[in-house]
Image: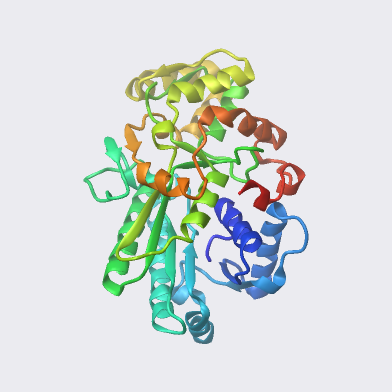
Length: 380
């Protein structure tokens, strides 16, 4: 497993540990295996109460950006002999990272994990499955419906994150076809805190604009009122991935859209949720072109340094307020229905997201999950 210390990764790791008896080898970016173990145990302490289940965990220092994952030959061969499932969650999710840096992590790192998968498939008991966490935003700026059977459709991209995740998914599909790897690809949309508690360790995309609005730092937003802001809680994604990883992989690549789909809120709903919760004035929604040309400079001048800072911090997220893509999740939702899993509507959990964000001081004082939530197994 990669990405075990990340927001989604730790949720998946918690499910593997609490709902199975499997042993997990976590590849962790660290100077050595001891440092990797400490990082992994610190992450687990945030999400699971009690001891870190060390007898079912092995942390290995690795680097997605280094040749051979920076593993010595003996370790690489040992993994190939013993590993039967690969869950590749690690990625840079930064919207502002330069393209070459994002490629080193998201594309080159995925290529190295595919090399490991090929070795696992050829040795030991073989490879049961490669599960790869992609994103619904491989759709880029594609207009209209975008489903699991689509990938390359002439789209452009909002940032290096989207472009490199698209390039990485192409790699995964090509490798699966060329080497016959049993592969599942999971495409979540915007992942936010848990539906019941709001708990999160990641305060990006929606959280920044919500915080700025709560502090009265802007009164207008760029976007389209009917733009799709496809938001899903992390427990829906983690439960979905874990459940679907029990489905057989037979022929080709199985792709799943872990999105709200037809239940996705519009920008109007996202805005009105903040207005209702914080009881402040309703921000005007201005077409992005007009905002860039007229509103943003005016707000910077009239609102002073705080307004300029808020606009600058929120700028990477504003493109997600004008999305014209409808993510077709019908087949995925049907598969999840067999496991008793369904995506909640944003209005059913939005207030809990904001309750937790305020309690956690927008990421400055995040309590352990056990302080606010029942055990993972009870949620799943």
